[in-house]
Length: 121
Image 1 (tube, helix red, strand yellow):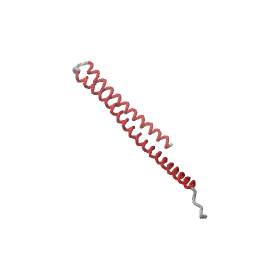
Image 2 (cartoon, one colour):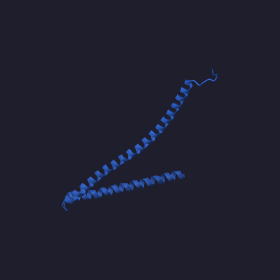
Image 3 (cartoon, helix red, strand yellow):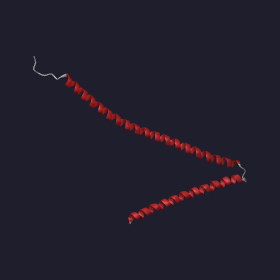
Image 4 (cartoon, one colour):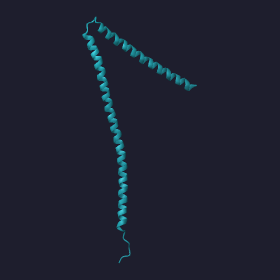
């Protein structure tokens, strides 16, 4: 009979089980990281697609309204009251929109200058 002790099957089984659990934990960690990265990429693609859809819808509405108004105006006789009203309304609307944009820009510049003055004091 030999006096050397042979490793028991239980020790080897526990060692193998421990290695398997460690390997599984590492794999799960890597999978979670990959899933987060994939979700970020998918979210960027969805936002891009959504923003392109919103742009195209807004463009279509704007084009449709403006084209229809211009087309209707061109169909009307030159001396028509309706035609003059459409043309004058369009001109005045554009002037008001441009003046509001200019006023907003001026107010923003003024606010920035006031903040810079306060910082210097």
